[in-house]
Image 1 (cartoon, rainbow, N blue to C red):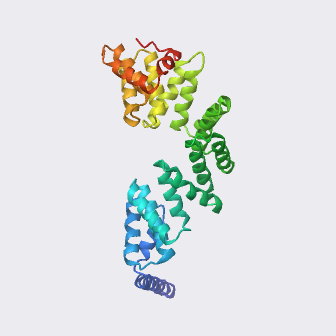
Image 2 (image 1 turned 30 degrees about the vertical axis):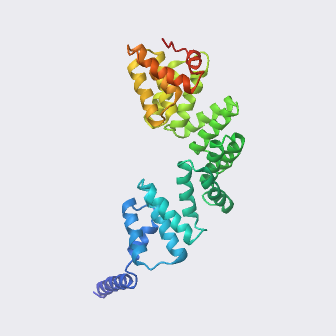
Image 3 (image 1 turned 60 degrees about the vertical axis):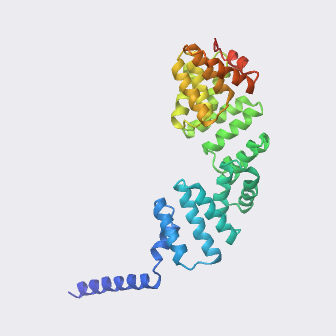
Length: 313
């Protein structure tokens, strides 16, 4: 009986303490959810908003809550409010590295390299999220055509995580741009080995196979199909698939692949010319309009297709 009485007393005391804790900090649950990356994005946004609206947070503490809410907005694919929160966080605390990373990632994805670069440099200097920071530095260098600098940055990321497929794929792209095709192919192969859905690596490897002699269509086609399945937005995957479909006489499917590429990248000369070929070969004489427009964008596109073994008339 005494043991049962003690147990009941302990339970009552625990409930009383929990009640006191909630009374002492009515926002305790919101605070915990705002801090927790495992919480569902919208619930985390709501928790952080509750904390920001009612928690009387100031300075660095408010910056932390804003950065957390920005991260939750990113998880919810809400880019504009995420950027707004990251910028507000940094206005309160320029040293908040979570907001620094979040803002840099959004700017980089939107092509704002000059704005992203100092944020990435700040992360590298602080040793914060270093794999991602070095990867982002490599992306900036690659986008600027600074291929050796890109390789150096990707090397630094891969020294910390040798199986990071995005860095392997982009290092391969930089090496290919430097004319190091063998090393580039090795990086593509490694990226795909670590992540079989690495769409960029699959697409770029497909193009390497298309440029090889002789072309092994089935081998290249496997990469093209996998790239498009993994991410239909990757233009190089759609165009590689379209070229292979032209080589196989699959005019309708080829036109669909080139249409998809042109949806994501209007004016792409390879996709325009290929769509024109597919249209002409299927009996639509207006395909010549696509081919002529592609030729205006790239005077060598016809020869490019001849080199790939595509009959264009």
